[in-house]
Image (cartoon, rainbow, N blue to C red; front, side, top):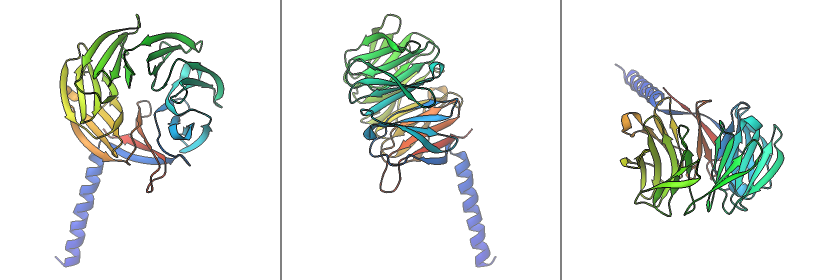
Length: 327
């Protein structure tokens, strides 16, 4: 074999192996949708599935960006927010809810043109938003607890007082339970929705539990600790520890892909971690590079895409990176 032939043979093996490796990756980068002149930190996101529109809390821009995922561009910016952190969309009333940490307001916008539709105040540091579409309820975390909004009437319905400021919280779709991360108390708190009262508190021995997700198939509550960076798994019934595994650093969002039994964790150190959640093992399948500061993400099962919010850096413009899960 001539030297040139040998070189081409080696290159052929290299490229075929690279293609095989790419195809085996649990997430593939499909596209990057630029957000324009967005400075600083980007917080949480929500989706209008019918219109394929993504809502992006541009915290330091005091705005919410509206992204058309089909056209792959920003189609509108909703200005004059006060450090927006959480967003939620209610399909039944075609209403967008924006939680503003700067003034404690939840601002409502309705219809395809996002006309202002009111404000609701409960307290300081309005943050995470969760929507129970079946019950037409919107839940918002504040410094003192969780506010419950009647999404049909767009009015206050109840307030669930908590002993410490909550971080991420999740609604159990099969019961009346709400699970809440309480970093101050180094605990996971369980709340009964019917009574609006805390009914349990599980010690975590770590006060850096921020992201949370529920693996309902395994009856597990999942939390990510930032220091040290660990994925903690707890029994949903009584909070008993199941397992702990290493993960990426400075995580702010986590989602369960129920079809593939995977967990996606987005981290500010510039990585995504993907875990195999089958049989309760939570084995890491891959660590995928993103951009430092890209802490927030949104998995949309209806579109089968993981969307990662990437802030502006000297190397990268602010963008939404669209990842496609592989079988």
